Image (tube, rainbow, N blue to C red; front, side, top):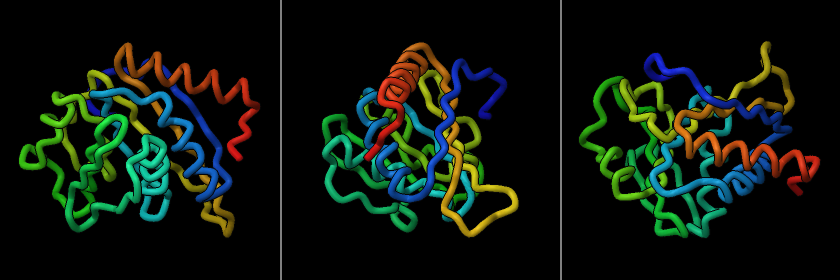
Length: 172
């Protein structure tokens, strides 16, 4: 977890594969808000970009591409989106990417490989960890854990959890 603050809420979602991870992202898109920071952690191939694509395309952003080489992509959407990938960055300051400014402008900011951002501002944040089974198996199963920081972030993710429970989680 970033710094020493304790998360306020946790949502755990078992995903059976890429399609379900994408659909979960679309569902989450109904609960994001301007100024929310989503920090994504997970091994290479865990599904971080798939989840981001679901969230972003759920906001009508169009075709989402991984910013692995460009570092940051921005998308006009119902809530403007800034999508960063810090895989190729050394841990430390990310000031040159203007991610904090994007939050201040009211953008939704999604950051893959967030462990490379030493001190992200988590006043209103979802920390998303995508875990693959141990030991790795041949299925596409994974567990998505989202922890919240901040009153608004906690309220919105609780609403998402309630929606999932009401539907009996039928993402199809």
